[in-house]
Amino acid sequence: MSVAAHFSSDSSWFDQFSKPFIISGPCSAESEEQIMTTAVGLSHIPEVQVFRAGIWKPRTRPGEFEGLGAPALQWMKKAKEATGLKLTVEVAKPDHIEQALKNEIDMLWIGARTVVNPFSVQELAEALKGCTVPVLIKNPVTPDLRLWLGAIERIHKAGIVQLAAIHRGFHYFQKSPYRNAPMWEIPIELKRLAPQLPIITDISHICGKRELLQEIAQKAFDLETNGLMVESHYNPLLAKTDAAQQIAPEELRQLLAKLIIRSPSGDPKFESQLESLRTEIDKLDGELLQLLARRMEIVSEMGQYKHQNKITILQLKRWRHIIEDRMAIGEHLGLDKDFLLQLLEIVHQTSIKKQEEIFNKRTQDKAPETQ
Ligand code: PEP
Ligand code: MN
Image (cartoon, rainbow, N blue to C red; front, side, top):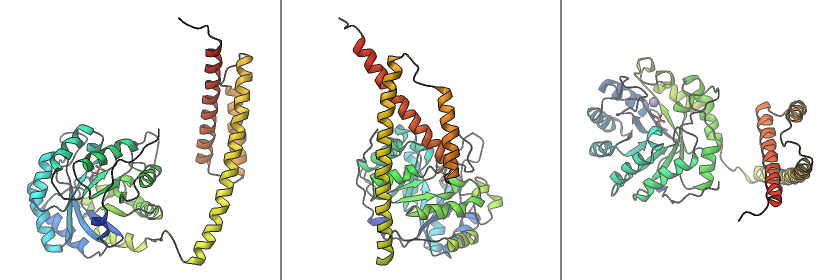
């Protein structure tokens, strides 16, 4: 299904920040000492410009630490006064917005569990009418770009034009080393649809464990992220929520120092080399498409033949042979196993669909007219 973005945001609020842009702070606000010590530690890292903390925590099960609510906002305000860092907190209910704005929170974010529910997002949108704060919208828990776009559009419709998206990964049923599978293709597609919208990568909720943060941070910058959200705690071992993924401010400083930030374009000599490689890629893509089209023509011919001879579309033995044979060839050529498997599956599924269309059409053509 083709998707279009029905909003146009104003990114000038974001352009005012120096780059790389980093939001950091604890998963949850736990005590005044924790907030102040962590914020002061972070304020020595020039890239960190916004301090985050969860005030109201959406927990999977009741009885887990649910945040300390409004009183914790006063510690945030104190941290801002002491460090000059801007502040952001998660809002999930209209009342959270009111409390946050009363306590000089500079930007709000909407969490992944809220974004899955258009009723909740709409309630927040109503409460935001007339406000001028930037709003950052996390991706929904499920890998659904339309739901993410829908939430951004609802907030935009309320008159909020200072927007950003936060990519925090997706719930994924297959085994993955990550807490939330990054599925980079989804934020990349969002970028294509809304190029003016900054996208910030929440590496902490993607990774789930601190050992993976460096690699994912680098990947995010290689894919041109506009910034990072990273959970930090002055002593991560003491954290009441998400302890395994939080890092101390000093560890964040080291992580940022190791990052290689490449620019989207380089000097003219490099650009011309890149251009000739792009031409080569364009040519190869053209050839690939022609070959695929030729393959589909043959698939259609086979469909007609199968229909005439009353043979089933799916030939399991043949499909198994194709997989074994093509995997062996592909691996010999150095292609990634997962990539090969996915490619073969999509080609096979599309071929089956094509033959089904032929079967349906032929059956309809033959069917006697109904009155
Ligand atoms: C968080 O940022 O602490 C949080 C709860 O994140 P998410 O909504 O991405 O799960
Ligand atoms: Mn968290």
